Amino acid sequence: MLIRSCQIFSPGDSEMGCPLEIKTGNKMQKEQNITIFHLQRKDGSSLFLHPFSEPEILLKLNDKVKIIGKYGKEPRVESLTMFRNDLYRHIETSVKSWISDIRFIPRFILSASAFLVIYLFTSFVIRDPVPMIDELALSIGGSIALFLFLAKRDQNSEKSSKKRLELRILIDKIVFEEDPFVKEIEEILYYNESVDEASLIESISVNDDNSFKNGKENDIKQIVGYLDKIFSSKIYRKKIDNINKKDTNRLVKWVTDNKIDLSLFAMYKKLKKKIYM
Image (cartoon, rainbow, N blue to C red; front, side, top):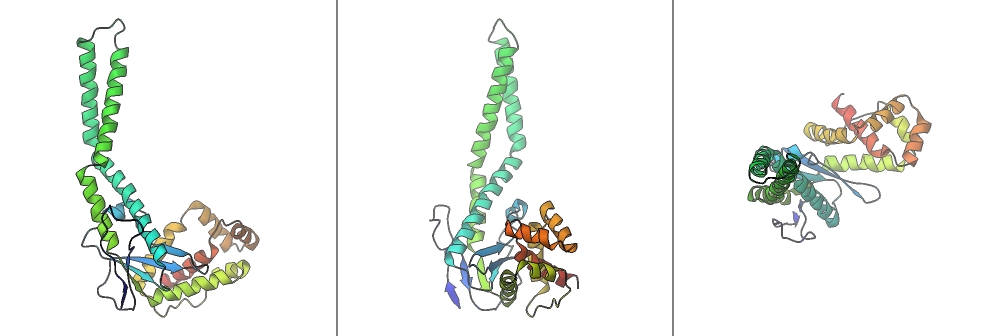
């Protein structure tokens, strides 16, 4: 049953318009290439797990790449709107970097040519008592000004505008569907957020039953891959070492100081154990 439909957004549409499309039910039409997972936490906040913070993945999106969102508990419209706007910001940053990279060589060549032309012109046409100094200053200044002008022009070019629009349209076509597996891991997350830190730390190193009634291997691998990126920093690797050493006191202090999302980490470890069983 369709409970909210969404029209394609153009760059001029309101930021607070219809965010993303949501469908209820567990029916899947086709196998998807990329899955976005929405997890609702105990305090009602939303956590979206997706790969689009990496520009290379976002820029490779096209009509042949299928994207679907999955949720356990139905997300609020405001959460979806904020998520869509966050993806729009990722698009803007990624396109800026992309157009800057592909146009760097032409900009460099034109700027270098400008440097040479200005230097030769000021050297042979304009005579001054102090040679070289003025010529170099004018040449360097002119080439830098041209480089910056071309960079700004490229950002507003038809090519970059077309790329932004294509990616925005793909984002606006994302459909969120209710999924029993996501509901199951949400329940694990709720439980982790309900128990005390010491018990949760102890449970991380225990080999419990890692079976999931509704978990598909591809979904588990995707969500673990997204969480791998979150927990791959040096600071988290240090905390993992302390979990393995069962240094409970230090970990509890980290949780108290909000330096580690222990509930999410415990869920991640449970899912990861499932892959390597």
